Image (cartoon, rainbow, N blue to C red; front, side, top):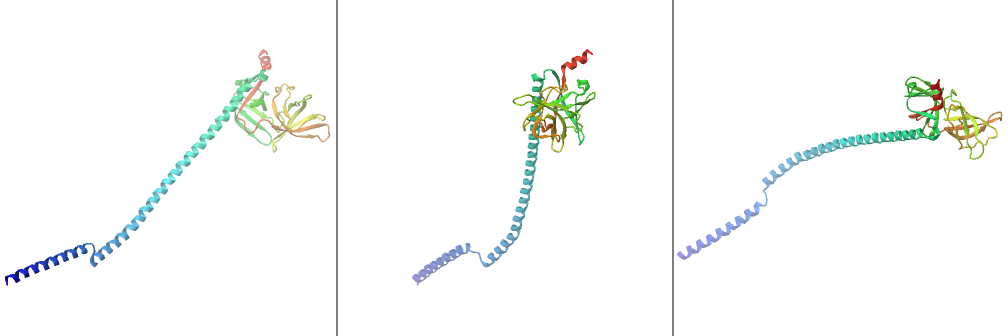
Length: 290
């Protein structure tokens, strides 16, 4: 009997051990898997999180895009301002460069030996009246500076632009060679490569074509396109050799007695800033003697 009970206890112990191991194994397997209730709760929570998080992500992305657009707009505005400033500085540099070039040319004219018999007054244009009947400049020099009526006015390259028609105390009016009133009738000449100078008179201006008329040219004179027209110096008003323009067309008058030529002005009469007024020194000495 005792032997049986001892064996029975051993069997129960072994059976209990097996069951315990089985339960432990089952529990471990259940730990990696959720039951239906846990799965339901997990799905509900996950769906709620999806409903909340997706719009939140879209909203965050939208505001980020708006912020990016705003930053891009500010950057674009800054770049445009920099570009405008650069264009302004570049234009200012071009203007200063042009002024410097003009002033250097003026300095060269002051030292020109061919103009040694003339006093030279630098002046700046401060106003302009342009209409069909007259073309007048106002310069910032007048009688207090030595300016007088009738003095010739030139620009760089010894290019003639007109003469003083009215000198006041501190400013003066310059009548351009393009004046339709023909105030500036100019004794002119073409100096050919061979032969005698070809004389004529600058009389009249075609405002639409921007051309001067060189008239009273001898009928037998060989005037050609491209020849340079200069002052003759015969009138005493203008020095000899001031450049008036270039011949672009030659015709004969209706009576066949003289020739006429259309002349393109050497100076750009629509773009003048600094000029030089000339005064013959001999006349100054004569005036002082009186």
